[in-house]
Amino acid sequence: MSEKRKSFPLVDTTEPNLIEEIFDYSLPPRITFDGPVVEYIHGEPVRFDPAELQSRDLVITDTTFRDGQQARPPYTVDQMVRIYDLLAQLGGPNGVIRQTEFFLYTKNDRLTLDRCRELGHRYPECTGWIRAVPGDFRLVREAGLKETGMLTSSSDYHIFQKLKFKSRKECMDAYCQVVDAAFEAGVRPRCHFEDITRADIEGFVLPFAERLMRMSEEVPEELSVKIRLCDTMGFGLSFPGAALPRSVPKLIYKLNREVGVPSDRLEWHGHNDFHKVHINGVTAWLYGCNAVNTTLFGYGERTGNPPLEGAVMEYIAIRGDLCGIRTQVINELADYMRSIGFPIPDNYPFVGKYFNTTRAGIHAGGLRSDERIYNIFDTAKLLGRPPRVAITDKSGVDGVAHWINELFGLRGEERINKIKCHKVARWVMDQYEKEGRMTAISDEELEEKVRELMPEYWAKYKG
Image (cartoon, rainbow, N blue to C red; front, side, top):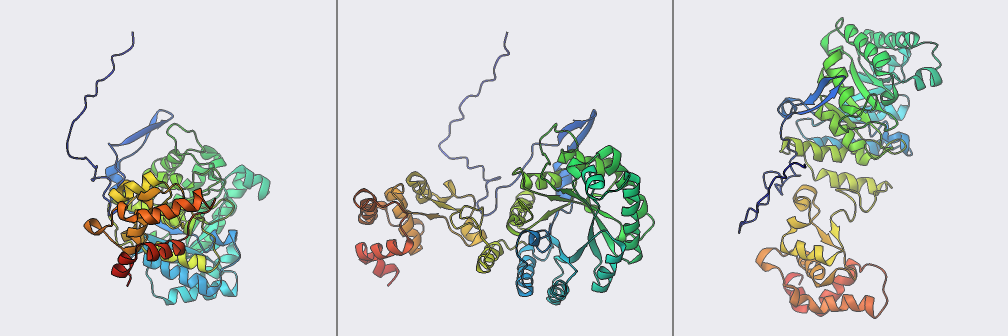
């Protein structure tokens, strides 16, 4: 016998329920939870509590000038200073974008660092990135930096196959010698556990983390070791029930709850080889890792890193507030990156040329009725990008009417109804039905036709 199915009677209403407690159009949609989320590892609960999440100091860190530069020709000094300045404006006074990291090896590296610090921004804090060798801490000390990242590869692929250590103990001892060198230099070490999602978690990662925590007890708190969990090949999984070493929740749980690495000393660094880079970073936030390491527009080695602007939107969605973030700077950054030859796909979220542009007539009709129907949030307010319609043979009169109203900047009762736009819509269809056109109609062509076919409106709104 099958179980009796639950009945769901219709809740009739004459007023729409737009679920505005989640879909507040003035912000990215709120991320809410029904309660604590629990999964299990060896019978023990692995959980995150939404109430605890709200109390933690979640932050975004940036590696645009380090990992981001490993995927492109080097930025000029002026370009890096401009990007750094915009990142500071974007993150706001609360330091949501808390840190960024720089190479220190060349004259240009050191000049860039000096010029960025001359801007006087408290955030993002400038940190270094060096090889895991004691001598490199001289560079950090000479630069006057308080913190640096260093590579401490954690999988046997790296320990034995790349670094050629004869044993894990030899490897761990070498890493700890470098950590000691950082302490002696008065520099906080941030150990990058490279390739952690292919590592022996119980056999190397956790013993190494425990040793780092013991070493940290012997130095002032401001020098205590941070750990960056590097999903170097993008193998991490956010799925409940996924096994170690690939489970992001279980990796965080092991280090945070079992080893005792505080949340504010854990950082996630991912790669996008399997299209999971953003969700893995957010999952790390949820389960106890306070910092997610990102690059501007996700540009980084091979498939890239968590996109900084995506993390910004996710942060707002978790907090339910802008928290001092200046979201319109995202579009300024995109414009600047394009100006220096950085390619951004047309459909890229938030900043692509067509990210909030529709070509479907039925969608345009929805936008004309209420732009919330087919726009993700108030993109005009948050990004300086109102929703648009690209005019093709699929746009219909609704699409043309929406385009014309946007051209004239008309809202509410002022908007021109689609009957008045019929001549322009007919001209559009003739381009495809009679002329055999195969491309979208440009804004310049449409403006000219509106001027010609709707002269009274052009004179009123553009004259």
